Image (tube, rainbow, N blue to C red):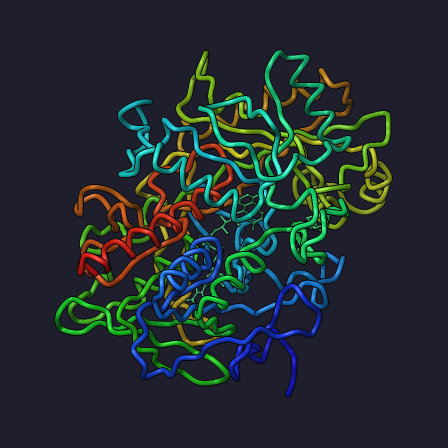
Length: 548
Ligand SMILES: Cc1cc2nc3c(=O)[nH]c(=O)nc-3n(C[C@H](O)[C@H](O)[C@H](O)COP(=O)(O)OP(=O)(O)OC[C@H]3O[C@@H](n4cnc5c(N)ncnc54)[C@H](O)[C@@H]3O)c2cc1C
Ligand code: SF4
């Protein structure tokens, strides 16, 4: 049998690849297409992978489908930026608006395990007030969730991923000890520390989803810095090596290279299953419930593509909000040179962080907050950044690359405002499956620009204080996508309720970053996984009460 994970499904014949062992397999239960499973889940990343595990462990029959391959990192991943392009969702999309988004490696993945396979592992909790930002801070929208409940689910995810973090976290309410000790801060992180201390603000080693000591078959992180092209040692605690093996062991089936193109409904406002393309043909999986967890672009795209006579505007869309309130996060940076060698690529890219401007609102001329982190771009990414952001080419680019070991940078993850005009719609063009591609429309608002301006000034001061020279600003970067199927208390102003259940179709659920009403100033995956854990528990409770 061919073993080409990019073109031939691997998880078939009653077994799935074991991502923790070379050439090995895990036994996997399989369901027939005409067997009505309890849950068919579209996408197996931070949201879908986590929920597949929770539901399978609760005893439900689960099929998780992912458009991407099922990797064994130990044998499939190379320490090579070009080779690892295979991890990204690079299908064509149309981007417009005043500030068109750059899509690809920086914001989406296509694999069993989703974007977590190549994410940077920064694992942060929301500031509690963000869950009620409209009523407590005066901007954005309130979440239907309470931060205290989320605090417990954050702890569950931190345990499940064995997050390595500091003994004392400087900001926010008390939290339990991180399961594993913090990683040593590298030279790039120490530059952040020096700047922060000079400016009188707190900093900390970053809580990260890569282990600082052995865990089962995961060795401790070896600080080679390949994290955002996929970790080939399995130190990284991605969904691929944490939730997915647990889900399969509990009886879930995971189908790789399975692109879902349409969700079917009956005449009684219920979904009946989904159409998916695998191994060269379209098939239909019957399901009592469907969960969409395809990331903030593919989730609304699928809901819109599933329009039918009863739902001409797409599924779950009586509010008209499917695809709207798309949010990205600001990812601007300030770069400079240090006299001493830094070699910032050594170790995970963001080993030190400050959340000062997430928790301190003094003197701000904008709503929202931002964290900033130390950086460690790999060489090709760095050369691309110099070319695209500074317009440096040819011999000058070669000369600049000579400074690679001395360059240092600080980068924000900044809260951008939810705006109805930022949205995902369907374009007329079709993809290789004959499905309409997504059109992604994005514009910054004045508040966003003020937040970015504040962060750039502050980070420049921090780099100067740390002793950097030749400092320059990178203005053109964004990251992480969320929104497009927001949760809320009111069916007129939200797509799903607090349990991620669609208001319109009770057996249709959405469980990924799409449900965020606001995005905060931290990386989102811990919150996505915490919501998925909560959703799993709620579904179990609802089922026990006969309310599914
Ligand atoms: C380079 C990079 C660095 C990042 N760093 C961090 C970080 O340090 N910390 C952090 O918290 N977050 C980080 N993130 C963001 C984080 O990875 C995402 O926010 C998170 O994974 C999103 O979860 P999700 O479930 O919404 O989607 P994903 O994890 O992307 O999963 C979606 C899955 O759905 C599949 N899919 C979509 N549509 C279909 C369909 N129609 N049929 C079948 N399958 C489908 C996709 O193939 C994909 O595998 C980073 C992301 C990137 C790209
Ligand atoms: S630095 Fe650590 S987490 Fe990153 S790729 Fe290397 S071993 Fe994996």
